[in-house]
Length: 131
Image (cartoon, rainbow, N blue to C red; front, side, top):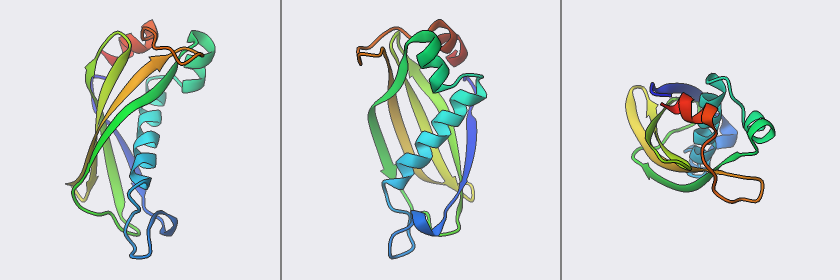
């Protein structure tokens, strides 16, 4: 995934708080969906990684900066790209835009683990696709 992956989401009433602003934790859901769709776009699924390679992708850390709020009926664009990669993990930069303006940025560190939760080497197929 040397390129950027773009995922779009529309804000519904259920996503907002009493003031009509997106509740802060919902941004994490949008970022997760964008990461999952990025993996799917590579021809992989989390289920396939688990079944065929005995590995899972888990979030180790998340650093998110909220710059401006999203509101009811906004349409957002989430741009995901790989910042760095090691033998057992990779870090993604995810930018959320509203009308071309950056409203949030997140760096998500993802680790590959086995069924017992122990870090393992990236499966070869995932490693090659992330280059």
